[in-house]
Length: 530
Ligand code: G6Q
Image (cartoon, rainbow, N blue to C red; front, side):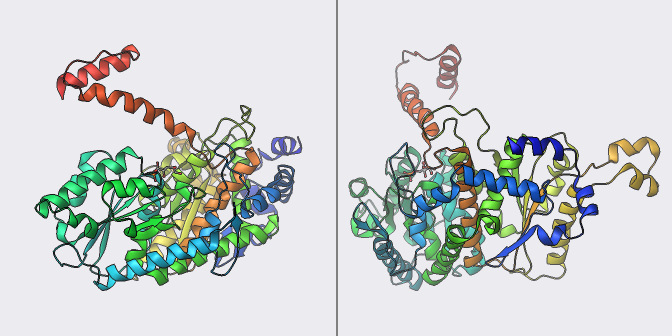
């Protein structure tokens, strides 16, 4: 294949050589769209690489796949579902009919319901059981029903209403519940229970514990539940059986995947924090990126470029992971959000037809905000034996202008991409007077690829664009690998086995154990020592 031959020629070429030879490289390998400046010149690619990657995208039918998603076709083949998170941010008045349902109108009906509720909580007209206004919203959910609102709430903290805080409980570990609710007044706490299925062990267990916590404070008065709990779910019966008034239930649809659900009612706690207007600015940002992805030529299409670069390292350089390094403390949770987005979407071993693939699919995604990571794991990226392509994300303006902080932060970000690309050679070290014996330890080879994603300012709109950029990057890779990026069957087996072990841990009498020897012994030891 042409790309393989090209890779053999290109793999020895360094970024230093490529920049030295071509003074127009930086200008050429930079794109700007929707206020996002994307510099991919520090990647181990040439114009030919990019042309070949574009050809690969066309051969894999990427344009048709994009169209199929936007038309609402059932591209989630293993679950026979349409994939329509893009409909969640369509402006009102547009039309998209799926299975006879006008989905954009349905989306806006729920957004209006959310906005009315969020306004009531924010203005204080929604009161708790004893008449107090809400000071803390606690989101209970896990995975896609947690990571999105959690990441976005942290990211947009500067825009949230003073005096109203949002906390998150996700883990089945009782410590999560205990620590998050410590110090809270049940009379001022509103729980937003988020579960698409309303079957999730962690969420239902935490919601039950929350109910007991509220009831204990209200002397067991069941009517308190309706004032302190609302639900986001597709399962009305489950919600009503739990005791939540379905008038306070915010629905969504099976064509919204959990990890793509931030823009649905799953974002309710975020909307309460930042207000409906800011929330729609965020949706507008998502939508602008959707349109960019749908309509831009592949060569100018930011998510396509990012996806193809990731494929290049994953399948040719055999890079196993990719680091996301935001230089903004507000984006501290973005790497773990993207970890779910990409790894749950593209961690697949069969193609769309169910055939085992003969190539690598999704890489491991990880990261931490800069500059913290610089004092920890960056060593391996600079001098280790593994190739770790990195995304550096930063903003030209800070939301917290404090003395020199922002210039120092950004200086570090730019310095890292420079150091990773160009390193420090033996000759440079010698010239700097470094002792000869120490030089080998101190050489940085460089040639470590990075993308720089630079935006003006962190706003709800720019966050929306950034998240949609990664969503569509994930989509692009899935299309190249020919996999279903929208199912997640791999998480089922563990749940199934846990259901079997739960009664074995809880039974009073010693249970008959029929697992492997290791698991049997772990269960016995736990029962003995707990
Ligand atoms: C995401 C996954 C998963 C899901 C959680 C919570 O794409 O499907 O992370 O969001 O398992 O599921 P519920 O919302 O149904 O509780």
